[in-house]
Amino acid sequence: MIIDCHIHLSSPGCRFIREDVETCLDLADRAGIDRMVYLFNLQDSGGYDPAPDDILRSNDLGMTLVQHYPDRFSSFCYLNPAHDVRFLLDEIERCIARGPCAGIKLWVSVKADDTRLDPIMERASALHVPVLHHAWYKATGYAFEESNPAEIATLARRHPDVPIIMAHLCGGGWRGVLDVKECPNVLVDTSGAQPQAGLVEFAVEQLGVERVVFGSDWPIRDLAVQRTRIDGAQVTADARGAILGGTVARLLNATGKVAVAP
Amino acid sequence: MTTDTFDASAWVGQWVFGSGDGESLDKMIRCLLEVGVRGAVFSPIRAVMAPEPMNANTVLRSQIARRDADEFAARMAAIINPSLPNWREQITAFMDAGDDTVVACKFIPNYHVYELSDPVMNEVANTLKSLDVPLCVQVRMLDERAHHPRMLVPGVPIAEIVEFARSHPTLRILACGTYQSELRQLAEADNVSVELSSIESGNTLMNVLDILPPDRVMLGTHAPVYYPAPAIAKLQGYGITPETIEMIATGNAERFFSQLA
Image (cartoon, rainbow over all chains, first blue to last red; front, side, top):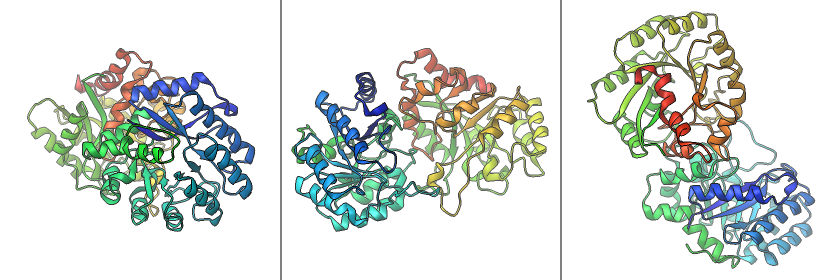
Protein backbone atom coordinates (compact mmCIF):
# COMPACT_ATOMS: atom_id res chain seq x y z
CA MET A 1 0.00 0.00 0.00
CA ILE A 2 1.50 3.27 -1.17
CA ILE A 3 0.07 6.29 0.65
CA ASP A 4 0.74 9.91 -0.20
CA CYS A 5 0.18 11.82 3.03
CA HIS A 6 0.19 15.28 1.45
CA ILE A 7 -1.99 16.35 -1.47
CA HIS A 8 -4.26 19.24 -2.27
CA LEU A 9 -6.93 19.96 -4.79
CA SER A 10 -7.11 23.23 -6.67
CA SER A 11 -10.83 23.43 -7.22
CA PRO A 12 -12.53 26.77 -8.05
CA GLY A 13 -14.91 27.65 -5.25
CA CYS A 14 -13.89 24.48 -3.41
CA ARG A 15 -16.41 22.62 -5.53
CA PHE A 16 -16.27 18.87 -5.92
CA ILE A 17 -15.47 18.45 -9.64
CA ARG A 18 -15.49 14.77 -10.46
CA GLU A 19 -13.45 15.18 -13.62
CA ASP A 20 -10.60 16.83 -11.71
CA VAL A 21 -10.66 14.18 -9.03
CA GLU A 22 -10.61 11.44 -11.67
CA THR A 23 -7.55 13.09 -13.24
CA CYS A 24 -5.86 13.02 -9.86
CA LEU A 25 -6.69 9.35 -9.50
CA ASP A 26 -5.41 8.58 -13.00
CA LEU A 27 -2.11 10.26 -12.20
CA ALA A 28 -1.97 8.40 -8.88
CA ASP A 29 -2.58 5.10 -10.65
CA ARG A 30 0.24 5.83 -13.07
CA ALA A 31 2.51 6.61 -10.12
CA GLY A 32 1.44 3.48 -8.27
CA ILE A 33 -0.12 5.43 -5.39
CA ASP A 34 -3.04 3.70 -3.71
CA ARG A 35 -4.31 6.30 -1.27
CA MET A 36 -3.87 10.02 -0.78
CA VAL A 37 -4.46 12.34 2.16
CA TYR A 38 -6.19 15.57 1.15
CA LEU A 39 -5.16 18.51 3.28
CA PHE A 40 -6.84 21.62 1.90
CA ASN A 41 -7.94 23.26 -1.33
CA LEU A 42 -5.43 25.62 -2.91
CA GLN A 43 -7.99 27.90 -4.55
CA ASP A 44 -10.64 30.02 -2.86
CA SER A 45 -9.54 28.91 0.61
CA GLY A 46 -8.71 32.33 1.96
CA GLY A 47 -4.99 32.34 1.31
CA TYR A 48 -2.58 32.53 4.20
CA ASP A 49 -5.18 33.63 6.76
CA PRO A 50 -8.44 31.85 5.90
CA ALA A 51 -11.72 32.95 7.42
CA PRO A 52 -14.04 30.42 9.06
CA ASP A 53 -16.14 30.11 5.91
CA ASP A 54 -13.01 29.31 3.90
CA ILE A 55 -12.16 26.57 6.36
CA LEU A 56 -15.65 25.11 6.19
CA ARG A 57 -15.59 25.05 2.37
CA SER A 58 -12.20 23.39 2.17
CA ASN A 59 -13.11 20.77 4.74
CA ASP A 60 -16.46 20.10 3.07
CA LEU A 61 -14.55 19.28 -0.11
CA GLY A 62 -12.29 16.90 1.78
CA MET A 63 -15.17 15.08 3.39
CA THR A 64 -16.94 14.83 0.04
CA LEU A 65 -13.82 13.25 -1.43
CA VAL A 66 -13.78 10.63 1.29
CA GLN A 67 -17.48 10.02 0.88
CA HIS A 68 -17.12 9.38 -2.86
CA TYR A 69 -13.78 7.55 -2.81
CA PRO A 70 -13.33 6.02 0.66
CA ASP A 71 -10.71 3.57 -0.61
CA ARG A 72 -8.58 6.22 -2.33
CA PHE A 73 -8.72 9.33 -0.16
CA SER A 74 -8.41 10.28 3.46
CA SER A 75 -8.90 13.86 4.53
CA PHE A 76 -7.48 15.98 7.30
CA CYS A 77 -9.37 18.82 8.97
CA TYR A 78 -7.78 22.12 7.96
CA LEU A 79 -7.75 24.78 10.67
CA ASN A 80 -6.59 28.33 11.30
CA PRO A 81 -5.52 28.53 14.95
CA ALA A 82 -6.22 32.28 14.96
CA HIS A 83 -9.94 31.55 14.97
CA ASP A 84 -12.14 31.49 18.05
CA VAL A 85 -11.52 28.39 20.12
CA ARG A 86 -15.18 27.48 19.99
CA PHE A 87 -15.09 27.44 16.19
CA LEU A 88 -11.92 25.34 16.17
CA LEU A 89 -13.37 22.76 18.51
CA ASP A 90 -16.71 22.70 16.70
CA GLU A 91 -14.93 22.11 13.39
CA ILE A 92 -12.87 19.30 14.87
CA GLU A 93 -16.10 17.81 16.21
CA ARG A 94 -17.80 18.12 12.82
CA CYS A 95 -14.94 16.81 10.71
CA ILE A 96 -13.22 14.29 12.96
CA ALA A 97 -15.31 13.26 15.95
CA ARG A 98 -18.51 12.98 13.92
CA GLY A 99 -16.94 13.04 10.44
CA PRO A 100 -14.49 11.02 8.37
CA CYS A 101 -11.38 13.18 8.78
CA ALA A 102 -8.40 11.35 10.18
CA GLY A 103 -6.13 14.20 11.22
CA ILE A 104 -5.58 17.94 11.38
CA LYS A 105 -3.77 20.17 8.91
CA LEU A 106 -2.10 23.45 9.93
CA TRP A 107 -0.38 25.75 7.47
CA VAL A 108 0.99 29.31 7.82
CA SER A 109 -1.76 31.25 9.62
CA VAL A 110 -0.14 31.02 13.04
CA LYS A 111 3.34 29.93 14.04
CA ALA A 112 3.64 26.38 15.28
CA ASP A 113 4.96 27.37 18.71
CA ASP A 114 2.05 29.74 19.37
CA THR A 115 -0.02 28.70 22.38
CA ARG A 116 -3.18 29.18 20.32
CA LEU A 117 -2.44 25.74 18.94
CA ASP A 118 -2.80 24.14 22.37
CA PRO A 119 -6.59 23.54 22.28
CA ILE A 120 -6.19 21.96 18.83
CA MET A 121 -3.37 19.72 19.98
CA GLU A 122 -5.23 18.69 23.15
CA ARG A 123 -8.22 17.69 21.09
CA ALA A 124 -6.00 15.81 18.63
CA SER A 125 -4.57 13.91 21.54
CA ALA A 126 -8.02 13.02 22.87
CA LEU A 127 -9.14 11.82 19.44
CA HIS A 128 -5.85 10.01 18.69
CA VAL A 129 -5.30 11.81 15.40
CA PRO A 130 -2.08 13.22 13.95
CA VAL A 131 -1.43 16.84 13.10
CA LEU A 132 0.34 17.65 9.83
CA HIS A 133 2.08 21.04 10.05
CA HIS A 134 3.84 22.96 7.31
CA ALA A 135 7.45 24.00 7.99
CA TRP A 136 10.36 25.32 5.96
CA TYR A 137 13.71 27.05 6.28
CA LYS A 138 13.81 29.74 3.62
CA ALA A 139 16.76 31.89 2.72
CA THR A 140 14.38 34.04 0.67
CA GLY A 141 11.97 35.03 3.43
CA TYR A 142 8.81 33.56 4.92
CA ALA A 143 5.14 33.72 4.04
CA PHE A 144 2.84 35.28 6.64
CA GLU A 145 3.35 33.30 9.89
CA GLU A 146 5.21 30.42 8.26
CA SER A 147 6.86 28.11 10.73
CA ASN A 148 10.30 26.60 10.70
CA PRO A 149 11.28 23.18 12.04
CA ALA A 150 12.62 24.57 15.32
CA GLU A 151 9.14 25.91 16.03
CA ILE A 152 7.67 22.49 15.21
CA ALA A 153 10.05 21.00 17.78
CA THR A 154 8.77 23.45 20.40
CA LEU A 155 5.21 22.42 19.65
CA ALA A 156 6.15 18.77 19.76
CA ARG A 157 7.79 19.07 23.17
CA ARG A 158 4.68 20.77 24.55
CA HIS A 159 2.46 17.98 23.19
CA PRO A 160 4.58 14.84 23.21
CA ASP A 161 1.64 12.48 22.85
CA VAL A 162 0.41 13.91 19.54
CA PRO A 163 1.97 12.53 16.35
CA ILE A 164 3.08 15.53 14.33
CA ILE A 165 3.93 15.17 10.67
CA MET A 166 6.28 18.01 9.80
CA ALA A 167 5.81 18.69 6.10
CA HIS A 168 8.51 19.21 3.47
CA LEU A 169 11.74 17.35 4.23
CA CYS A 170 13.58 19.23 1.46
CA GLY A 171 12.24 22.50 2.81
CA GLY A 172 13.43 21.95 6.36
CA GLY A 173 16.61 20.37 5.06
CA TRP A 174 19.41 18.94 7.16
CA ARG A 175 18.92 21.48 9.95
CA GLY A 176 15.21 20.71 10.08
CA VAL A 177 15.82 17.01 10.54
CA LEU A 178 18.20 17.72 13.38
CA ASP A 179 15.74 20.18 14.96
CA VAL A 180 13.16 17.42 15.43
CA LYS A 181 15.49 14.51 16.03
CA GLU A 182 14.93 14.50 19.80
CA CYS A 183 11.14 14.75 19.40
CA PRO A 184 10.01 11.15 18.91
CA ASN A 185 6.47 12.23 18.11
CA VAL A 186 7.57 14.15 15.01
CA LEU A 187 7.65 12.51 11.62
CA VAL A 188 8.81 14.26 8.45
CA ASP A 189 7.02 14.07 5.11
CA THR A 190 9.04 14.13 1.93
CA SER A 191 6.67 16.34 -0.04
CA GLY A 192 7.60 19.29 -2.15
CA ALA A 193 10.70 21.21 -3.16
CA GLN A 194 13.42 19.96 -5.48
CA PRO A 195 14.80 16.43 -4.92
CA GLN A 196 18.04 17.33 -3.21
CA ALA A 197 20.16 14.23 -3.12
CA GLY A 198 21.04 12.70 0.22
CA LEU A 199 18.23 14.12 2.33
CA VAL A 200 16.04 11.03 2.44
CA GLU A 201 18.99 8.94 3.56
CA PHE A 202 19.97 11.55 6.15
CA ALA A 203 16.44 11.68 7.54
CA VAL A 204 16.27 7.89 7.82
CA GLU A 205 19.68 7.76 9.46
CA GLN A 206 18.89 10.51 11.99
CA LEU A 207 15.20 9.90 12.71
CA GLY A 208 14.72 6.25 11.94
CA VAL A 209 12.76 4.82 9.07
CA GLU A 210 9.47 4.97 10.99
CA ARG A 211 9.64 8.75 11.14
CA VAL A 212 9.98 9.48 7.43
CA VAL A 213 6.79 9.37 5.36
CA PHE A 214 6.02 9.92 1.70
CA GLY A 215 4.10 12.94 0.52
CA SER A 216 3.97 14.76 -2.80
CA ASP A 217 2.33 18.20 -2.45
CA TRP A 218 0.32 17.52 -5.61
CA PRO A 219 -0.73 19.45 -7.70
CA ILE A 220 2.07 21.87 -6.90
CA ARG A 221 4.35 18.90 -7.50
CA ASP A 222 4.15 15.73 -9.62
CA LEU A 223 2.98 12.50 -7.98
CA ALA A 224 5.31 10.19 -9.90
CA VAL A 225 8.30 12.51 -9.57
CA GLN A 226 7.85 12.91 -5.84
CA ARG A 227 7.41 9.18 -5.32
CA THR A 228 10.54 8.46 -7.30
CA ARG A 229 12.51 10.51 -4.82
CA ILE A 230 11.93 7.62 -2.40
CA ASP A 231 12.42 4.92 -5.00
CA GLY A 232 15.77 6.44 -5.95
CA ALA A 233 17.07 6.91 -2.42
CA GLN A 234 19.72 4.57 -1.07
CA VAL A 235 17.60 2.87 1.59
CA THR A 236 16.61 -0.75 2.13
CA ALA A 237 13.51 -2.23 0.58
CA ASP A 238 11.92 -2.51 4.02
CA ALA A 239 12.65 1.14 4.70
CA ARG A 240 11.19 2.10 1.36
CA GLY A 241 8.02 0.19 2.18
CA ALA A 242 7.66 1.93 5.51
CA ILE A 243 8.28 5.36 4.01
CA LEU A 244 5.95 4.84 1.06
CA GLY A 245 2.99 3.75 3.11
CA GLY A 246 3.56 1.40 6.00
CA THR A 247 3.99 4.04 8.64
CA VAL A 248 1.15 6.27 7.48
CA ALA A 249 -1.13 3.23 7.25
CA ARG A 250 -0.49 2.53 10.92
CA LEU A 251 -1.07 6.19 11.80
CA LEU A 252 -4.36 6.30 9.92
CA ASN A 253 -5.51 2.96 11.30
CA ALA A 254 -4.84 4.18 14.84
CA THR A 255 -7.42 6.93 14.31
CA GLY A 256 -10.16 4.39 13.80
CA LYS A 257 -11.30 6.33 10.74
CA VAL A 258 -9.89 3.99 8.15
CA ALA A 259 -8.76 0.38 7.91
CA VAL A 260 -5.77 0.37 5.61
CA ALA A 261 -3.63 -2.65 4.91
CA PRO A 262 -0.02 -1.58 5.60
CA MET B 1 9.52 4.43 -21.33
CA THR B 2 12.48 4.55 -23.69
CA THR B 3 15.63 2.69 -22.68
CA ASP B 4 17.83 5.16 -24.51
CA THR B 5 17.60 8.14 -22.17
CA PHE B 6 20.16 10.92 -22.40
CA ASP B 7 20.87 13.43 -19.64
CA ALA B 8 21.51 16.90 -21.06
CA SER B 9 22.69 18.43 -17.80
CA ALA B 10 24.59 16.64 -15.06
CA TRP B 11 27.68 17.32 -12.98
CA VAL B 12 30.77 15.62 -11.69
CA GLY B 13 32.09 16.51 -8.25
CA GLN B 14 30.73 17.63 -4.90
CA TRP B 15 28.34 20.57 -4.71
CA VAL B 16 29.77 22.72 -1.96
CA PHE B 17 26.42 23.23 -0.23
CA GLY B 18 25.35 19.61 -0.48
CA SER B 19 25.96 16.49 1.50
CA GLY B 20 28.00 13.57 0.32
CA ASP B 21 31.55 12.42 -0.18
CA GLY B 22 32.25 13.69 -3.66
CA GLU B 23 30.76 12.27 -6.81
CA SER B 24 33.37 10.94 -9.22
CA LEU B 25 32.73 10.44 -12.91
CA ASP B 26 32.55 6.67 -12.46
CA LYS B 27 30.10 6.96 -9.58
CA MET B 28 27.94 9.39 -11.52
CA ILE B 29 27.83 7.07 -14.51
CA ARG B 30 26.87 4.12 -12.29
CA CYS B 31 24.10 6.17 -10.70
CA LEU B 32 22.74 7.26 -14.05
CA LEU B 33 22.91 3.77 -15.54
CA GLU B 34 20.87 2.50 -12.59
CA VAL B 35 17.99 4.76 -13.61
CA GLY B 36 18.19 3.94 -17.30
CA VAL B 37 20.29 6.85 -18.52
CA ARG B 38 22.68 5.80 -21.30
CA GLY B 39 24.60 9.02 -21.76
CA ALA B 40 25.08 12.46 -20.28
CA VAL B 41 26.64 15.85 -20.76
CA PHE B 42 28.64 16.52 -17.62
CA SER B 43 30.21 19.69 -16.32
CA PRO B 44 32.72 20.00 -13.46
CA ILE B 45 30.79 21.31 -10.48
CA ARG B 46 33.78 22.88 -8.77
CA ALA B 47 34.07 25.28 -11.70
CA VAL B 48 30.88 26.95 -10.46
CA MET B 49 32.65 28.45 -7.47
CA ALA B 50 36.21 28.48 -8.84
CA PRO B 51 37.89 31.76 -9.74
CA GLU B 52 38.61 30.34 -13.19
CA PRO B 53 37.25 27.18 -14.83
CA MET B 54 40.14 25.88 -16.96
CA ASN B 55 41.61 23.47 -14.44
CA ALA B 56 38.31 21.82 -13.59
CA ASN B 57 37.42 21.52 -17.27
CA THR B 58 40.80 20.01 -18.12
CA VAL B 59 40.58 17.41 -15.39
CA LEU B 60 37.08 16.31 -16.36
CA ARG B 61 37.86 16.16 -20.06
CA SER B 62 40.85 13.92 -19.33
CA GLN B 63 38.72 11.64 -17.20
CA ILE B 64 36.09 11.31 -19.91
CA ALA B 65 38.62 10.89 -22.72
CA ARG B 66 40.40 8.11 -20.80
CA ARG B 67 37.27 5.99 -20.51
CA ASP B 68 36.98 2.97 -22.72
CA ALA B 69 34.11 2.96 -25.13
CA ASP B 70 31.24 1.25 -23.37
CA GLU B 71 27.51 1.37 -22.93
CA PHE B 72 27.55 4.92 -21.56
CA ALA B 73 28.10 7.98 -23.78
CA ALA B 74 29.90 10.45 -21.52
CA ARG B 75 30.29 13.93 -22.93
CA MET B 76 31.09 17.33 -21.50
CA ALA B 77 29.90 20.91 -21.47
CA ALA B 78 32.93 23.03 -20.65
CA ILE B 79 32.29 25.79 -18.15
CA ILE B 80 33.30 29.06 -19.75
CA ASN B 81 33.55 32.30 -17.80
CA PRO B 82 33.43 35.12 -20.39
CA SER B 83 33.99 37.75 -17.71
CA LEU B 84 37.63 36.67 -17.55
CA PRO B 85 40.13 38.19 -19.96
CA ASN B 86 41.12 34.77 -21.28
CA TRP B 87 37.66 33.79 -22.48
CA ARG B 88 38.88 33.15 -26.02
CA GLU B 89 41.54 30.79 -24.70
CA GLN B 90 38.92 29.02 -22.58
CA ILE B 91 36.72 28.41 -25.60
CA THR B 92 39.40 27.38 -28.09
CA ALA B 93 41.16 25.13 -25.56
CA PHE B 94 38.03 23.01 -25.30
CA MET B 95 36.08 23.51 -28.48
CA ASP B 96 38.88 23.35 -30.98
CA ALA B 97 40.40 20.19 -29.61
CA GLY B 98 39.20 18.05 -32.46
CA ASP B 99 37.77 15.42 -30.16
CA ASP B 100 34.13 14.71 -29.52
CA THR B 101 34.35 14.81 -25.74
CA VAL B 102 33.33 18.42 -25.34
CA VAL B 103 30.01 19.06 -27.07
CA ALA B 104 28.97 22.43 -25.63
CA CYS B 105 29.92 25.39 -23.51
CA LYS B 106 28.08 26.20 -20.30
CA PHE B 107 27.73 29.68 -18.84
CA ILE B 108 26.96 30.37 -15.19
CA PRO B 109 26.35 34.14 -15.24
CA ASN B 110 25.02 34.50 -11.71
CA TYR B 111 27.82 32.68 -9.88
CA HIS B 112 30.47 34.14 -12.21
CA VAL B 113 29.05 37.63 -11.81
CA TYR B 114 28.36 38.85 -15.30
CA GLU B 115 25.33 39.51 -17.44
CA LEU B 116 24.43 38.21 -20.85
CA SER B 117 23.92 41.83 -21.84
CA ASP B 118 27.55 42.75 -21.08
CA PRO B 119 29.35 44.28 -24.10
CA VAL B 120 31.75 41.35 -24.49
CA MET B 121 28.92 38.86 -24.88
CA ASN B 122 28.29 39.72 -28.54
CA GLU B 123 31.82 38.76 -29.41
CA VAL B 124 31.60 35.65 -27.25
CA ALA B 125 28.37 34.60 -28.95
CA ASN B 126 29.83 35.20 -32.42
CA THR B 127 32.81 33.05 -31.51
CA LEU B 128 30.55 30.21 -30.41
CA LYS B 129 28.53 30.53 -33.60
CA SER B 130 31.64 30.46 -35.77
CA LEU B 131 32.60 27.16 -34.13
CA ASP B 132 29.01 25.85 -34.25
CA VAL B 133 29.13 25.31 -30.52
CA PRO B 134 25.83 25.11 -28.65
CA LEU B 135 25.49 27.00 -25.39
CA CYS B 136 24.03 25.90 -22.07
CA VAL B 137 23.05 28.61 -19.61
CA GLN B 138 22.73 27.44 -16.01
CA VAL B 139 19.93 29.54 -14.57
CA ARG B 140 20.34 28.27 -11.03
CA MET B 141 22.13 25.56 -9.07
CA LEU B 142 19.53 25.19 -6.34
CA ASP B 143 16.07 26.31 -5.28
CA GLU B 144 16.71 29.82 -3.96
CA ARG B 145 14.81 29.02 -0.78
CA ALA B 146 17.42 26.39 0.03
CA HIS B 147 20.44 28.64 -0.53
CA HIS B 148 22.89 29.27 2.26
CA PRO B 149 21.46 32.33 4.03
CA ARG B 150 24.78 34.17 3.66
CA MET B 151 25.06 33.32 -0.01
CA LEU B 152 21.87 34.01 -1.86
CA VAL B 153 22.49 33.88 -5.59
CA PRO B 154 19.41 34.88 -7.60
CA GLY B 155 18.67 32.98 -10.77
CA VAL B 156 19.77 34.35 -14.12
CA PRO B 157 16.99 36.69 -15.27
CA ILE B 158 14.93 34.94 -17.93
CA ALA B 159 14.40 38.20 -19.80
CA GLU B 160 18.17 38.46 -20.16
CA ILE B 161 18.36 34.96 -21.67
CA VAL B 162 15.53 35.73 -24.08
CA GLU B 163 17.08 38.99 -25.23
CA PHE B 164 20.48 37.38 -25.69
CA ALA B 165 18.92 34.52 -27.63
CA ARG B 166 16.99 36.86 -29.88
CA SER B 167 20.19 38.80 -30.56
CA HIS B 168 21.80 35.57 -31.73
CA PRO B 169 19.03 33.56 -33.36
CA THR B 170 21.37 31.00 -34.92
CA LEU B 171 22.98 30.13 -31.59
CA ARG B 172 21.51 26.98 -30.04
CA ILE B 173 20.85 27.66 -26.37
CA LEU B 174 19.79 25.25 -23.62
CA ALA B 175 18.44 26.87 -20.46
CA CYS B 176 19.29 24.61 -17.53
CA GLY B 177 17.65 24.68 -14.10
CA THR B 178 14.57 26.64 -15.12
CA TYR B 179 11.20 26.53 -13.39
CA GLN B 180 7.79 25.81 -14.90
CA SER B 181 6.83 29.42 -14.24
CA GLU B 182 9.66 30.65 -16.49
CA LEU B 183 8.74 28.64 -19.57
CA ARG B 184 6.23 31.03 -21.07
CA GLN B 185 8.84 33.76 -21.27
CA LEU B 186 11.52 31.40 -22.59
CA ALA B 187 9.11 30.31 -25.29
CA GLU B 188 9.51 33.75 -26.86
CA ALA B 189 12.97 32.85 -28.20
CA ASP B 190 12.77 30.04 -30.76
CA ASN B 191 16.42 29.04 -30.35
CA VAL B 192 16.10 28.31 -26.62
CA SER B 193 15.44 24.79 -25.37
CA VAL B 194 14.97 23.70 -21.78
CA GLU B 195 15.91 20.63 -19.75
CA LEU B 196 13.52 19.18 -17.20
CA SER B 197 15.61 18.90 -14.01
CA SER B 198 14.00 21.74 -12.04
CA ILE B 199 10.67 21.87 -13.85
CA GLU B 200 7.81 20.25 -11.99
CA SER B 201 4.05 20.63 -11.68
CA GLY B 202 0.99 18.44 -11.24
CA ASN B 203 1.43 16.75 -14.62
CA THR B 204 4.90 17.91 -15.49
CA LEU B 205 5.49 16.97 -19.10
CA MET B 206 1.97 17.70 -20.24
CA ASN B 207 2.13 21.14 -18.67
CA VAL B 208 5.52 21.84 -20.28
CA LEU B 209 4.21 20.85 -23.71
CA ASP B 210 1.27 23.18 -23.28
CA ILE B 211 3.86 25.96 -23.52
CA LEU B 212 6.79 24.65 -25.55
CA PRO B 213 6.88 22.41 -28.61
CA PRO B 214 8.40 19.01 -27.88
CA ASP B 215 11.50 19.66 -29.98
CA ARG B 216 12.60 22.27 -27.44
CA VAL B 217 12.47 20.04 -24.38
CA MET B 218 15.15 17.67 -23.11
CA LEU B 219 15.76 15.43 -20.17
CA GLY B 220 18.18 16.74 -17.57
CA THR B 221 18.78 15.41 -14.05
CA HIS B 222 21.05 18.02 -12.39
CA ALA B 223 22.60 15.04 -10.64
CA PRO B 224 24.33 14.75 -8.22
CA VAL B 225 22.76 17.88 -6.71
CA TYR B 226 19.40 16.16 -7.24
CA TYR B 227 18.49 12.50 -7.17
CA PRO B 228 18.41 11.48 -10.86
CA ALA B 229 15.39 9.16 -10.68
CA PRO B 230 12.76 11.92 -10.31
CA ALA B 231 13.82 13.46 -13.62
CA ILE B 232 13.30 10.14 -15.37
CA ALA B 233 9.82 9.92 -13.86
CA LYS B 234 8.94 13.11 -15.71
CA LEU B 235 9.11 11.13 -18.94
CA GLN B 236 6.05 9.09 -17.91
CA GLY B 237 4.12 11.66 -19.89
CA TYR B 238 0.49 11.08 -19.18
CA GLY B 239 -1.28 11.54 -22.52
CA ILE B 240 1.90 12.00 -24.56
CA THR B 241 2.90 9.82 -27.50
CA PRO B 242 5.89 7.48 -27.29
CA GLU B 243 7.44 9.30 -30.23
CA THR B 244 7.32 12.61 -28.39
CA ILE B 245 8.80 11.05 -25.28
CA GLU B 246 11.60 9.57 -27.38
CA MET B 247 12.39 13.04 -28.73
CA ILE B 248 12.58 14.47 -25.24
CA ALA B 249 14.46 11.52 -23.80
CA THR B 250 17.19 11.46 -26.40
CA GLY B 251 16.42 12.77 -29.91
CA ASN B 252 16.48 16.47 -29.08
CA ALA B 253 19.78 16.16 -27.24
CA GLU B 254 21.32 14.39 -30.21
CA ARG B 255 20.35 17.26 -32.46
CA PHE B 256 21.31 19.97 -29.99
CA PHE B 257 24.69 18.52 -29.11
CA SER B 258 25.28 17.65 -32.73
CA GLN B 259 28.49 15.74 -32.07
CA LEU B 260 26.47 13.07 -30.25
CA ALA B 261 24.80 11.77 -33.38
